[in-house]
Length: 302
Image (cartoon, rainbow, N blue to C red; front, side):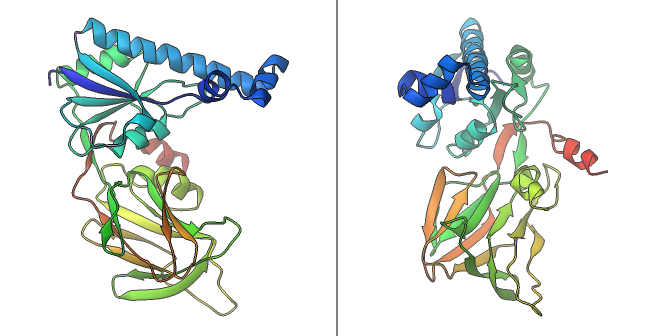
C-alpha cells in the first residue's frame, strides 16, 4: 500500500503538561531538587520528543503528507488518510482507535523506558523499516475485535478496544446491578464488572484473574470484580466467555454508577434503572500489530 497521506496522533507528556504548559510550582520544585520520580518523567519526555521528531522527519523525507495532532485534538472520525500513526504508548493508541472505523492504525512506542507499548509494533529505531514493510505489503493489518455499547437503546459513539468497567462512581462504594447473559439473570453486588476484548485480556482483566485470549480471537469475556456474596449465596454469572454473536445486558441499581471505556478518560453515567447492552461491533480495528503479541503473557502462566 502506497502511503500518500497519514495522520500522526501523539500524546502530551506529563513533563510537557506540568512543567512547560502549566508550570506547576510543586513539579518545578521537585525538578530543582532532583527528585527521582520527576527525573524519570523528564527522561520519558525527552525520549518521546525525540521519537516524534524522528517520525515526522521520516515522513517528510519520504514525501508523505501528514498532519500531527495531540490526542485531545482528535474528536471526530478520521477520514481521507491512508494510515493513522499513534505516537506514545498504549493509552495513545487506545485514544486514537476511538476515532477510527476503516483507517488502519500503527502504534509507535515513543518512550520504552516508561511505556510497555503492548499495541505498538514500532519504535524510533525500527519505524523506517516498519514503513517499508507496510508499503511493500510484507505485513498487513489484522482485524481486532471491538465492542459496542448502548445505554437505554442509545449507541455510545466510542468503540471499545480494551475493556469496559461498570462500577459505582466511588471506588469505595458497592456496585449494584442486574446482569443478564443468555437465559440467565442475576442480581449482584461487587466492586465492579469488567467486560473485555482479546486485546484487553492482558491488562486489567488479567490482573483481576481473567483469561488471557489470543489477539485474533472472535470472543470476549466478562469478570465480576470482588463479588460481595452473603453467606450461603452462590452466583453463576461470575465470569464467562461469549462469542461474537452474543450480547450481554446490565441494569444499574446505582444512583451514581459509571461506565468507563478503555481507561479513566471516557466515562458515561448510569443511574437507577439504566440499561446497558454490550456486544461485538461489526467495525473491527484494522491495526498493524503482531497477531502473537499476547503469547508472552500466555507463556508466563506456564
